[in-house]
Amino acid sequence: ECVIVYRRKGKEEKDDLLIALNLTPEPRLDWHIVTGNKKYKKEIFNSDSKKYWGSGDVYNPTIRTEVVNEDEKTYKVIVNLPPLGAIILK
Image 1 (cartoon, rainbow, N blue to C red):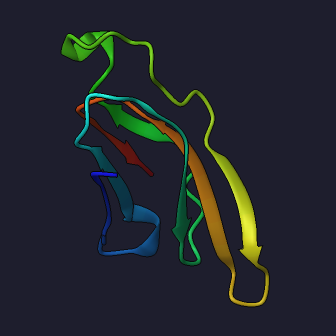
Image 2 (cartoon, rainbow, N blue to C red):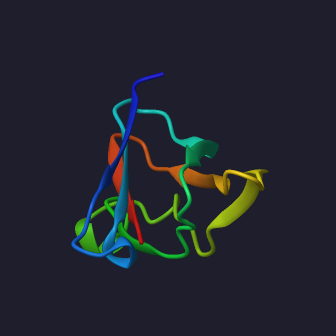
């Protein structure tokens, strides 16, 4: 579905970033991303923001997280991805 997600490791785990790119002209709403043992709590960049001349329609005021496996501390992050855009979570 032309979505690329990767983690940018920081010097400390608290500095890790999760980057998600939607390479299609369609927004991806309620997109599920399974992550390791880190909970991402805040959207720090959204290319659809009006600040970057986007529509401002697709954003994540809160990051929804669900536990996938408690033993391994694996989480599922549920986000909205803007069309032809990117988000960065911290």
